[in-house]
Length: 621
Image (tube, rainbow, N blue to C red; front, side, top):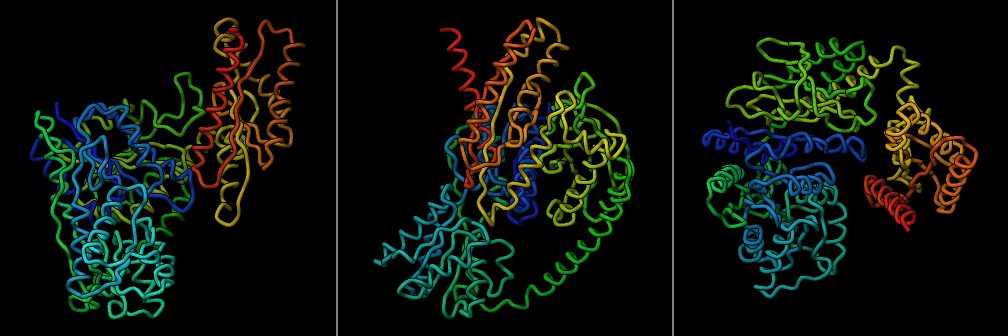
């Protein structure tokens, strides 16, 4: 049986990821391993539902089926993805896990010597250029590599007896949008910086751009440097001095480490690789490279212009599609704009084993259906082959000795399935491929919903209403949450989420039958709807689970709502002729702007389960 390695690597078209993946694939092939690469495109703005759909890719593979795991945590472009993947791996993986470029307590890791590398960069400014006021822009507070790079800076400053005052250090986040705030901070000190050393290239490029926008000459007035040596750092003007991370060596060493451990060998927890420093014009070394990248940037401009044009045509063509076959045909035509040997569309089930529509369509189903294969050789082949998701792809379709890339297919957090790609040029799966995937999913979601509902009017009703109880469903709850959270950037919002379970449904089903169980659910839903009135949006989330969205900043309103529900249940038990007593568990939580929505929902569930346990204990006593 072929041994498999799963690799979780985000945003594949970045230079570091592209080179590292190439080395991973080549080394794995030499050693007889098959590579499955699971990736995402990152978030779009503050759309938390889209982010949830992207994060879901980590739940696609059965972790226990792999001989080893590779993780590149700092490549993920979606919030909370790294943390959720850590939980998943620590719970399910019994095999070697290797983290690339980031040290983690429970994993092996392959990385550069962050501290020594940063010391070399700062030493260059101090010893070679004679600078004394060297400022530093730190990376993410939760990452050890950021702290190591900062420590390298401090070591050099201390070694040369140079002071580090308050306005010489700014807390960054490894991303592109803190340049203006950082420059404000550095320039507001009592002395002007001579150099700004940044913990990565994204921040350095942002700082460099901001300095130029303010008329500050780089490097004549203030020098700048970064870390990672991204391709972009070479063609900004002036070209950015940076620490070059050996991505090819890193990818190869990671696979060799997994192989060594699987063969019974031992290794240090952290394998550190040497780096090279690329000194360019931004620190005062080298010549101007302004014209060197002109042709490349011109080609990039032409490419992006073509992306915009093709995307417009593609949307217009998609809009005329009435069914999935038509959509896939159009999608196949536009897929010729990016390189691949084959694309495999694997779609989730929409019905359960009883033929009823699945209420929760945010997760991958245990069985999926291969609905289409697109290839350069044969074009579009429509399929209808159902198989266990655990296979990822039926062996007869899988290209021999080839790595496959897997991307989530979703619209917002509605999980449609996943896309498997056979390509040798994944670094070119960039802007248009992302547009193509996103728009295909958007129209696929509409078409699949339309096919489930015969008329548009019926579709609008059924897509937001639970058939059994008449309450709104999970989709309606998500739509309302999206509307509420949309203005978060411009103003604060207040709301509560109430989580409810109808207790004893299984006992009613087992004792009196499922028809009576359905009747009990409808009666409980009626009590909730009456109690919520105009104060809250009441939804059935699935099974015996309900939620009420209460758009208020007053906790008293929520408490009064819960009291009305208790009174409604008590009245029902006094007046009904049912041979059982109805009861329910309730808990609520207030949304906090600084947290992820999923944390708020989780806290409401925790409080509901606490209520359930407390009442069980009370009945026993």
